[in-house]
Length: 324
Ligand code: ATP
Image 1 (cartoon, rainbow, N blue to C red):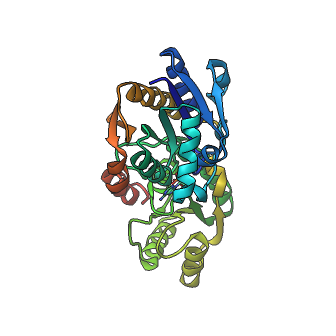
Image 2: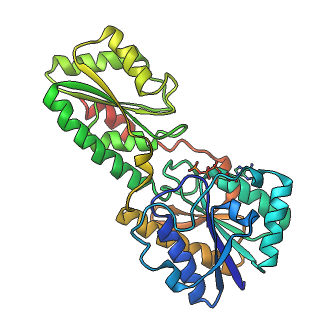
Image 3: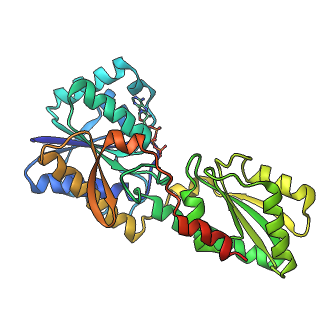
C-alpha cells in the first residue's frame, strides 16, 4: 500500500484528533504517503485532499473536534456522488482509506468499498457508543465525563433549593450515555430509549425519595425516550407530583465538545495505529474496535447490523438499588 487517506465524518467526537494523529504517524513510520480529506465525504467529492506529514498532526492530541473538519454530505448518498469521490481518489492515487465516524459513515464506506473496490477501514468515532464490535466508541468516555461534570453543578443548585431536575442527555437510540452518567452522578432515576418506564412508576420512585427525606432529585432523560424528552416528562410528572420545585436542563451540544479524556486519547491512538496496520496487512471493509481491552477487527457489515443491546445488566440493576 503506497498512499492512504483519512477522513472524519458525521458528528464529531472527542478523540478523533488522537486517531488522525495515530493514522498519519503510523503510515509515515511505514513509509506510506498520507493524505487528509477535509469535511468528510464532502472533501472526496470536492477533491479537498491534502498531503499530511508528521508535523501536520503536532499538538492536536488534546483537542476536541477534528482538524480535518466533518460534514453530513447528502451527495455521497447518490451513485453520481460516489463516482465523483472515487475519481478523485484515483486521481490522487490513493489505495487505502480510513474513515472515522458513526453508523452513517460506515454505511457510506461499505457501499463505496463494495462498488469501487476501495480498501477501507473504519474507526468507530461517535459519542453514542451504538456500534457493535467495540465495547467503547471514541468520544463516549469524554461525553460521559462532560455530562457528569454538568450534573454535579446542577446537583449543587438542586440541593440548595430542594428542587427536582430533569436533565436531557444525548442518545436518540442508545441510552449508553444516560445510563453511565446516572450511575456516575447518583441520579435518582434514568429514562432510556431501550426501556419502557411509565410516568406513574417514576412518580412513585420520586415520592418514595421525598418521603425518605431526599432534599433534591435528579432524573436523567435520554433524548430518544419513547415518552418524550425532558420537558415532556417533567410536564407529565408535575401534573400529579408537585413536592418539589421542578426544573429542566437540556445539555445539548456541549456533550460533543471538550478535550478528550485520557481514555479517549489512548483509544484513539490505539484505533488509528491498528487501522493503518490492518490496511498494511491487506484487510478491507473492517472496523477496528476495542473488545475486552484488546483491539480487534469486526467486519463493517457486522458492526452495522448486529446492533446489540449495549446497556450493562449490572448497571441497570444498580440504577434501582443505589438510588434509594
Ligand atoms: P453520528 O453517529 O455521530 O451521527 P454518523 O456517521 O452516523 O455519525 P451520519 O450523518 O449519519 O453520521 O453519516 C455521515 C455521512 O455518511 C453522511 O452525511 C453521508 O455522507 C454518509 N452516508 C450515510 N448514509 C449513507 C448511505 N446510505 N450511502 C452513502 N453514504 C452515506
